[in-house]
Image (cartoon, rainbow, N blue to C red):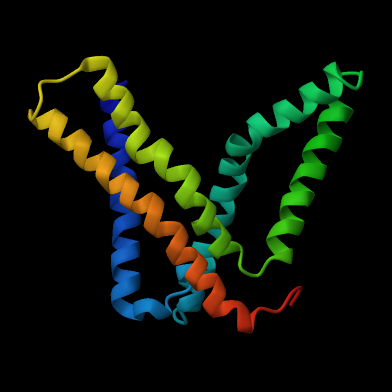
Length: 183
C-alpha cells in the first residue's frame, strides 16, 4: 500500500506543479483562481480542459461528499425517525448539492474562501499531523534522515498554516471592490 501512496503523490505532483509553475510564470500574480480563465487561445483546448474538469468534479464530488451524505441521512433516520429509503437519499443528496451550489454562486470570493479555510483545514491533515503521528509511533533516532525530513515537513506545514490564510484574506480584501453578487 505504501508504494501505491508514493506513486499517487508523484503522479499528483507531476500534474499540479507544472500547472502552478507555468501559470505563475506566464501570468504572474494576475493569474486567476482557475488557470483556464486566464487563458484565451486555443478555444478548443480550453473547452476540452473545462470538460475534463467537469468529469473530474462529478466523480470526486461524490467521494468527498459521501461522509456528509451519510451523516445527514443518519441524523434523519436515527434522530428524526425518517424511513431509510431511496427517496430520502435522493432528496438529501440533491438538497446538499443545491446548497453547495448556492454557496458557490453566492460568494464571488469562493476561491479566496477555499484558500482561507484550506490553510486551516487541509494543511494540518496533509503536512504536519501525519509527520507528528509517524514520529510518535516509530520514534526514529534524533537527527536521522527520516527524523529531519519529518521535522522539515512539520515546520513547512506550520508556515503554510500561518501564511495561507493571511494570503487568502489579503486577496479577498483586495478584490472586494470588484465583487458583484449573482453576476
